[in-house]
Structures are given as C-alpha cells and as structure tokens.
Length: 147
Image 1 (cartoon, rainbow, N blue to C red):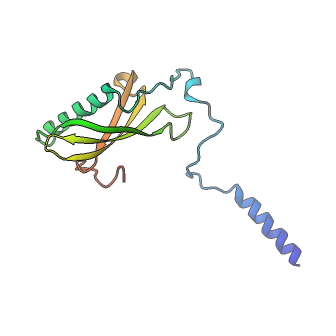
Image 2 (cartoon, rainbow, N blue to C red):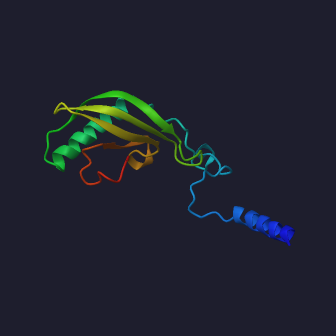
C-alpha cells in the first residue's frame, strides 16, 4: 500500500510539472531572434550616453513641462548615465536598451531618470525611439512605473 501511495504521488508530481499558469513569465527559448524576421531588426541600439538620446529626453521633458504643466522646469544635464539591461525579455522581442541616469534640473534638484531606447520605435517606425520617466515628476503615474 505504501508503494502505491508513493507511486501515485510521483505520478501527480510529474503531471503537475506541465501545469504551469499560462501567464507565467518565461522567455521563449525556441523563438527566432528579431534579426531573422522578414523585416529584420539589426540589434544596433544607441548606448545610454548617446548625445541624441539625452537631447531628445531633455527636449521632450521641457515640452511636456511647458505645454502640460505650464512650468519652465528643464533638464540641464545628465549625470552618470548607465545601462541597466539590454534585450531583457529575449532575442525575439524588439531590441531595447534600458538605462538610468541622474538629471540635474533647472531648479537645482536632481532626479533619477529611467529610460529605454527601442530600435524601430522612432517616427513611422524608423530609427529608434526613447521612452523615459523622471521620478518624482511623473505627476499622473507616480506609483505605477519604476518602483
């Protein structure tokens, strides 16, 4: 009888191995890299300290502050930009570089900036696009990103 119970428990354990939740986050190992698609990506994403990337964040931040918040606040400089990840979700996804830096603002304060640079995410899907967030100044979504 004990042997039957052990065998039954082993069978249940083996069956349970394949019962993973559908939404479990696991990278797909056999998915082809984005570079092998019909319209392939190159995998070339600018580094975190690229002048065009930082200038775009500065420009977008100033525009948002002026137009949406009626503020003259601006980013004057970036301190220590660094990469925090590259293609974190696997090779089959759009190539992205994840970065963070400290932003010196025109009011004398410093804030952490998190940003991602995505290939093919620019205007009309050309070039690269930058999504960013200045912590402490994302008034609408302060609790939902980067915490």
